[in-house]
Image 1: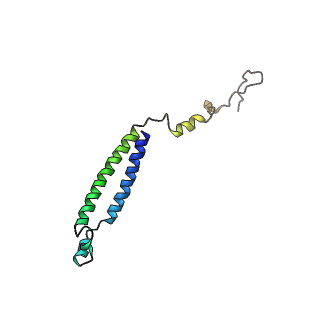
Image 2: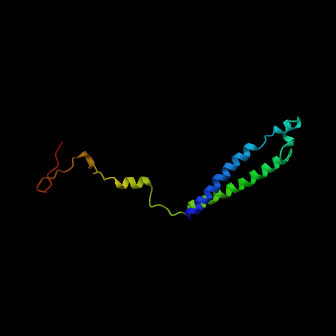
Image 3: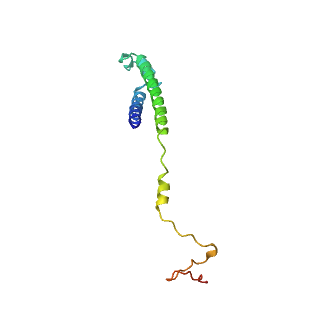
Length: 123
């Protein structure tokens, strides 16, 4: 399952870079006015309107592939087995437990060397 995630992620990144390139290559709405006055866009590789149609269709297809790979990545990531806990839970469990304070602000009982508990020290 790990190799599938890698393949889908690689395709996803390549499609995203391709979409960025295609969007940057497309002409804006004001570019048609320049072609009317002979800026050379009418003599391009795809013709005056051919490049707009080709780039628009390619962008639409790549957008659909991007959407599909996004869904596939979400599915693959959700089907992975869950970890036992978070990093924060492991950090809290690994620290030693502190002694709880007594209610009323009293001191902790002092234990003598003989092992018997002595009385609390009054304030």
